[in-house]
Amino acid sequence: MVSNVTSAERDGTLSSRNMGLEKDKSGRETRKPQSESNPERGETAASPPDWADGLKQLYDAVVEEPLPDSFKDLLAQLDEQDEDSPSSSSNK
Amino acid sequence: MAEHVRTAREKAAFKKELTEVVPHLRAFARGLCGRADMADDLVQEALLKAWAAQARFEPGTSMRAWTFVILRNAYLTDMRRNRFRGEYDESVAERILTAPADQEEPIHLSDMHRALLSLPTERREALLLVGAGGFSYEEAAEICGCAIGTIKSRVGRARAALNTMLDEGDIPKRSNEDGVAHREIMSELQQITRGDRDEVSD
Image (tube, rainbow over the protein chains, first blue to last red):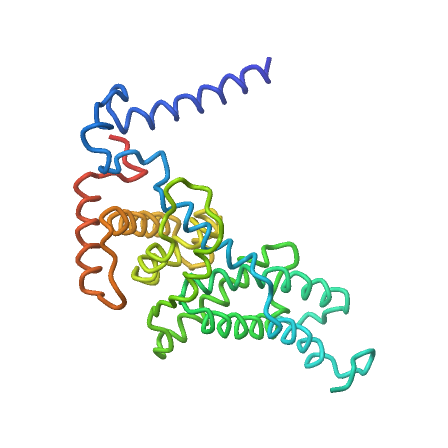
């Protein structure tokens, strides 16, 4: 019983939110003949613009770059500058 | 707050996590300052600061978010000293452009990068965090130390500005900041008159 109510409630919330969003944009129905007349208006906030993917690509391209040696050196040095105890660090 | 003495294991865990976020720090820095060499200098600076401040890191929280804050602060400090001027590195874009693109109509990433760098810092970083880094608005707000609504509006304006620039193919060359400022004002006006904000329901 309780679970039924909850799920119904949840469904109701979700669908009403979706409907609300759709209503906001077009008022009644999404049946505007705008695709032919003026596709550059950028009215469709739902679909991401063409460049959105490019932004991610720019970021990911750097993430996937091999790490330059300078960073490996720096990371290796962090331990040494922190610990003075000569454990297994090669003296340099 | 008393300095918590960190065990060797904690230090090792910290370093492992720190090492893992370095590529992300580099990507974020590259988006912020555009030039690869300066971006990497910035990341090195941030790494040293993060290491020095490691006692303040709470294990279990996001290392990426924590280090982004440090990187961002380092960037803003350097900006104030005029070290970066949103310079655009052609070679970076050239290299990125060689990456395979699946799209039929490939985006001119160099154009996009240049358009991105022409945005004011706050909008650029907001868009980078949300649009490229995949942070939620809430996380981005925490990183930038501002309200969620502020981040939303910054991202919205950054998107609008990029839309305008890229749609019209009208991207400033290098430091044609007047043109950009004008365009942004116009796009903001457009937004206001259209009233297409998330919160507005009627």
